[in-house]
Image (tube, rainbow, N blue to C red; front, side, top):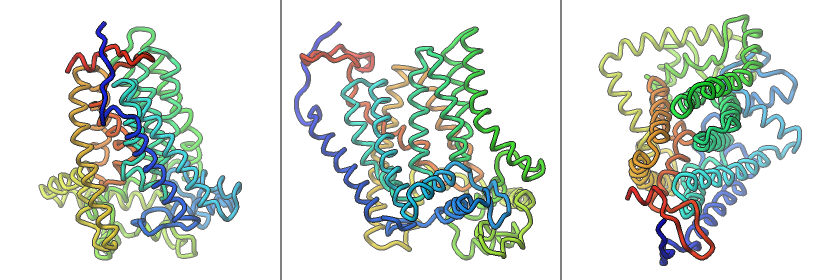
Length: 438
């Protein structure tokens, strides 16, 4: 055991992360207050908020998960159900209430990031990770958006916390991973891969009988959570849909509008190729009744997507590389912001710069983790590789990355503050394996 005095100075001061954390909380509160009970705010880029609101209104009016009585599986059900519950509880001010809930969830997500950082790097990284997660631009931004990102970030971090702790072999951690993975798949369709990550963690850390029980837990629990949704789809769509009807349109968007932000010309091309538009599908007036059922629309889009990707040839590779840039480097926030005010453009550019710096430090943190806990590092690498690979043929942008990756970046980026997990009240610290590797 090696003892050393607590280092003094700027980086060891508790007041600095406290200041940053306070600024992050103030910024989040400001966004909630400015946004109020409106559907969007001045910083908003638009998005899918109206679609979620229509589904919530349909549930509120006891018309089911549908548009004008037409059943839908185009959006995941959990967020519209939350909006409906808020409407029942808070009345006409429910949008503001949801933003307050997202404020709480965002702070909770930052706290969970801090707990993970302490598990991996030690106690001194905890406050810095909490502060970084609170001021991280993308995570702050989604506090005021009526979208799934904030709650999805919370669930992703909660899943990662149990994943990190599962090394001890406690079955409760695998049970919790299964519960979170199942709920996350009902919140965002692209989080369906989480049970597979849990399964890999089981295979890489457990052995023999314990491994079999844990594998059963992390697969069976998510299946049970998803089962009512799947049964509902099989019934209302007469066996044609199990999980989602979004795949076909997302594939078409992935080749025609890789950023997921269609301009008028791209919308017309989608209409020509796929025969319909998302905006037409998610109507709440009688024009929706002119469209076929969602399974038929999904099949039309799938056929169009296969043709478009085949015709793209090697140009499709270039599109995929561009989309990886949008997803991992947020280049979509630099090339598609001309319609915003100058102030918002500068904010987004500054946010991208902050993200690039954090990403660079997080990459260094992953290299450090490979030397400290190779099994965990490999699991996290597989996590980000699958999260990226699942989107390659679909639209890719910063928004799709945020809940899956950005909290993890906050955790990895605080590795420079790594210390022992055990620190005495006298200021003496046991040198952790992380530091010994240095």
